Length: 219
Image (cartoon, rainbow, N blue to C red):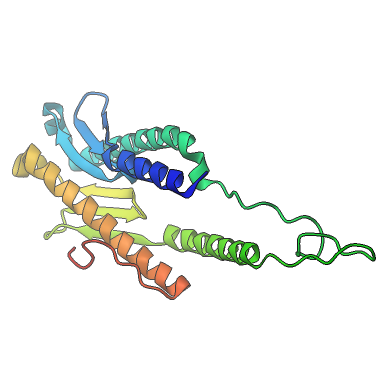
């Protein structure tokens, strides 16, 4: 694939990912959520049936619906990535057996010159794979917890995955459906932003560089 074709495909994939929003709702429509790539919530809406639930039940329902939507958005992305597999497939040719110069050297064989560009590319790819592996391990162990000002709402995330949600009783009638939904989205997005900041720090420790996260320090 030519470089310009790669750029075109990458641009198309980026536009698709940016516009990919998937929804899910609980069985009795107590909770409806919309999420983007990575399961990051765009909106959380509470239906009339949600008012009869206590805090723990409501939190469990929100968490389950978020996970369902996140799974669906992943399915959409996976289906689309099948058309862009070339972006994620190494097209470096394999070296033939021998001393790494491109040919076996025998008594009657001409000595071929090494291929420094290929060797440098291989070393670069191997190094980045190792860094990515270490980063995945470190990020999987990184857990971020945020809460609202009075501690009655708590959100725990690992990476971009919401693992924990605590809601005190009586929040829905106190805040109202719209305000509570907006507050939850804000807290989850804030937790994910903090987690992303920590991942950027981990990446910097592994690579010796600093990654800038949009909005860093604003949460």
